[in-house]
Every structure is written in structure tokens, then in C-alpha cells.
Length: 249
Image 1: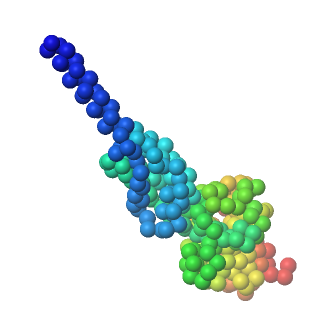
Image 2 (image 1 turned 90 degrees about the vertical axis):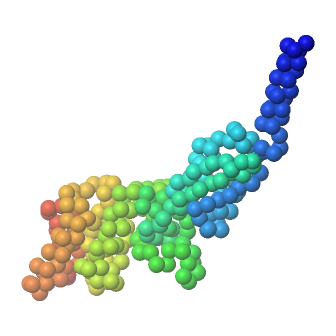
Image 3 (image 1 turned 45 degrees about the vertical axis):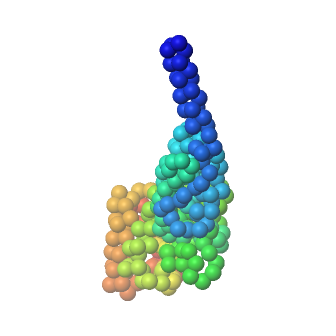
């Protein structure tokens, strides 16, 4: 009799545990997003298929990968707040510059990911960021220009450094663009263009990096200024062997 009572009690416990695990109480029905207050990003996360799993068996790693596919998200962590809430903590991707592709500007992260189109309204996102103009979209090498597409991170890094360093050499009115043949090209707005190339393709003979190229540019301009000359083209893609062409020659 005692054995039967013991077996019955065990069965009851198993039934109760099983019921507790599969009961609607443990079904994830709510989503909480932390790490951002951007309504567009929060809305995009809420639109993902994250809800409906059993709180004890949600695949947090899979959910994090889904969230990280969003171009605006650099990293995501997912956890369950019992009994029925999924918590998504995101680290947004921070734009470092605007890359204007065929006339449309895109916010770009340091890793080269196109985050989102730049707002066309005054004061919109990206209005304070420096710009690289790529009129033919050559830097994407055949990849469509859309959020999630990716520029080479090394190219974005060089562009960001040039945008930071060149105002001291060429003045605040200079513009940086991307050319299919010469790569990154700076225009001082007064007839001078200087080519810095593309670190992802030859010629990439720049042992001194961006700092070395900027130093070479400064030295060439100082030398020409002493001689009363002005260059219209300076090619800094060849490292220790830069070349230049004088105005009107």
C-alpha cells in the first residue's frame, strides 16, 4: 500500500511539474528592449519573431543573432525575465561618417556597415557628420546601396582619419570624395585635388599610413609655396614616391 501511495505521489509531482513547464504562464508574451530609446530601432526589434517560446527553453543565442542582423545594432544580448518577458539589450551601431552613394547619403559605422539613409530634413540624423561623396557608388563594388550593405572597414577608417586631419592642411572648406580609379580624393575647393587611394586595392604603398600621407602632403605644399608654385594634382598613393602636377601644365 505504501509503495502504491509513493508511486501515486511521484506521478502527481511529475504531472504538476510537467503542467508548470508547459502552462501558458511560462509562454513568453512580452518584450522589453533596453540600451536604446530610438523608436524606429525598438519597432524593428518588436517586429522580429522573438515571442511565443517557452520561457524555460527560449533560444537566447538565436534571438540575439536575429537582432544583430538589424543594421542599426552592433551587439545584442537576450535573456528571460520570468515568468513571460523576453529582455533584449542592444548596443546600437554608432555612425562615424556619411557616405553619399549616387546622391543618397548613408550613415556608416566604423565596421563599414551602412546603418540607415540620412534624413533629408534639416537637422536630421547625420547632419553633423563629415561626408564622403561617391557619385557612382564605386566603393561598394557592385553591392546595392541599402542598409546592411558593407563598405570595407579599412576604407572607412582611412576616410574618417582624413576627414579629421585634412582641415589643418587644406582648410575647412575641403571635400572628400571617392573615385573609381584614384580611390579617396580630397578637393581643397581652390583647384587642388590630392589622391590618397583605397587601402583595399593597389597601389596601396603607404608604409606611413594616413599620417604619413598627410605629412607628405603638408611637405609638398610647403615646398611649392616657397617656390611660388601651385599644384592641381598630388598623388600620395605611392608611399615614399609621391608625384604632383603643377597648375596649368
